[in-house]
Amino acid sequence: MKKVFLLFLVLCASLATVGSVSAATTVPGGPFSSSFNIQNIGTDTASVMVEYYDATGAMVFTSSHMIEVDDVLSVYVPAVAGLVAGEYSIVISSDQPVAATSNFSDADSGASYSGFVEGAAEWFIPAVYDNYYAYFSEVYAQNVSDSAVDITLSIYAPGNSTPVWTNTKTAVPAKSSVNWPQKDLAELSTNVSYSAIVTATGNVVAMANIFGSGSVAAQLYSYNGFPAGAATFYAPALYNNYYGWNAALTIQNVSTSEASVTVDFSDGTTQYYTIPSNSSEAIYVPAVPAIAPGLLSAKVTSDNDIAVTVNISNAYNRAATYNGVSEATTTVNAPNVMKKYYGYSSSMTCQNLGAAATTMTVTYAGSAATETSPSIDPGNSWEIYLPAKVAIADGYNGSAVVVSDDAQPIACIVNSNMEDAPYNTQKMDQLFSYNGVNK
Image 1 (spheres, rainbow, N blue to C red):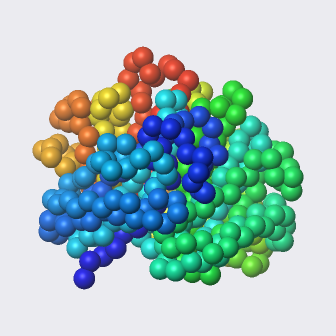
Image 2: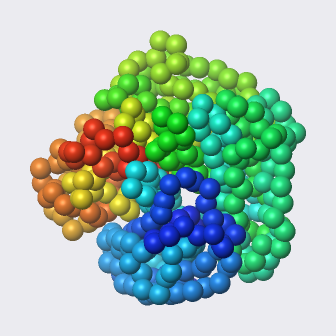
């Protein structure tokens, strides 16, 4: 039996923006183009089928592929024959387990997110905005069940377990997508970080886009919703003026009771928060008292279930979001890493989530290059910067596998940035960030 891996592609507008599609994005700019990457994380050659659905739920194209073990298939959606400009989602089915990511971008902004393994009837969205210091958001949901469902978005203010805004999309066809823009909602206030919950009468997947305006107009963030919370989350890559990078944590209480939350940063700083049910707390890392500058990581624990996201950005409008990690294994897959590939290069930041020190070893598909970390203490992270790897050829575009050598659980975040000159000093958001996939 084939394992089905669901990947929800947000934007595939290749030639023009779309006015007739019900789920058309409200992100300014465009036209947007998408690419996606499928990594075979199984033990044998994968036979893969890709089905493309438009926003109405109609399947408009299929393709089949063979992917060798640990190798990656990269697809630039505007180059797919038979697709017109528009928004699509895809369903990937494979006889081997696979990992998948998607990027979407226009000339000066871009974002990345991971594929969904399965749908759920409820999704938690930690951060939604209507002019939160010049940031706005939209929430997407796709019906991944076999029949029409009703999908509801409820938005919650900090400290309030009752939604301030609710809207239901009724009879959403199977495989079709809908979205809710938060910009200009009268019920939402300026400079307030809200949270949201997506509920449905059947299985759906959900994600959010965040975009800037004014001086941060090019910034674009994207992240997956959470089908469930957990009492412990990890943030492998946090920045406090780290080569100009900074980060912010958002913690959503997804339980029905008040949550007492502790954030332990890798420099020894500890912060405590009380978060009401269905509310969220936004923490700008450079504003944490006495926190050390540089590359950091964190462990977030709570007496009730929470969900965690991390935003990262710099002064050149590079910006991205990744999800906090609640589960980990000793092997992490990175479906897309690059070294000076059309100006893009990647870094991987891997955190030791175990109780003992470990070394980590990274290998790259199609390359003999390997590298082993120094001993990494529990809670600390190791950063792998591909441009510094002489053994990897310039122009590399492939996948990677990171293994904990001492059987300690790990988690990895991958950032890919258009950083080669002259792009490195241009104000443009060509930064893509995603969670490594546990194996």
